[in-house]
Length: 322
Image (cartoon, rainbow, N blue to C red):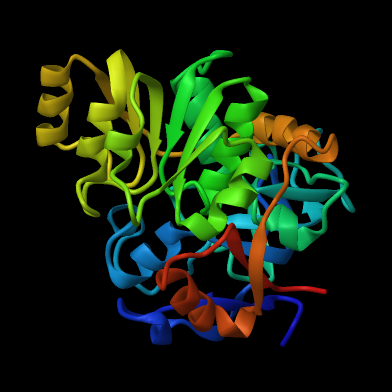
């Protein structure tokens, strides 16, 4: 291995976790306004394994070969011309380039400096890498899209997952009344995070267990038991459904109009400024980051297999550099 190459996880075709393999690839060089970050840890998200299998962001990335991953935490090793917000040696985290390729399953990444933020000082790189995509999704859904207000009733499906456990905490921070769906084993933990009500989706239909909801953050989608469509029944007239996994189909839009409620899709965007705010919340002790397990970079396939099995509490993370 030379100074011009690095280890990265690549795939040459679509398929199961076995298509992921370690390869030596050229080390990227930062362009003007970009930074080179030595990756210490890379978060894993459902969009990663969906893309690996041929869906997800394939429409953006195209056909393999390519590298996966968007969540990174690491240290700035080089800055391109014009960068004034970061310097060599800064510890940063971010979700660069999404939905275009960021190649985060690697030892180094380059991206515009303003797509990163200084990582939370109170957590290590593993926990910082678990934050960006999931937390930005939750933040952009609740703050930028729903404009959640104090006292509003917010229902969050799949609340124990990566996006969900941040959404619960952000909604609590916004002084909303949080209703969370999860298996019963997760209820105590979710109440510690800020849920006022919990619904066991394995034994009850959430639309029968709650009503008069102002905002639904649906992290499941209609592909699984028509969760988005069922969410419409829990909303008050004029309430808002933010449908995240699969967006809004024509059928869902028609059902929302008939029910007198609003519905919108959301795809997360890079946002260094929001990550700075989120880091402040983490450092102040208002937001906790849950990492269920870590895997070395060479075991990216095993990590994907674990994530695809479902029932993950919080996030899975790849460790890249000590």
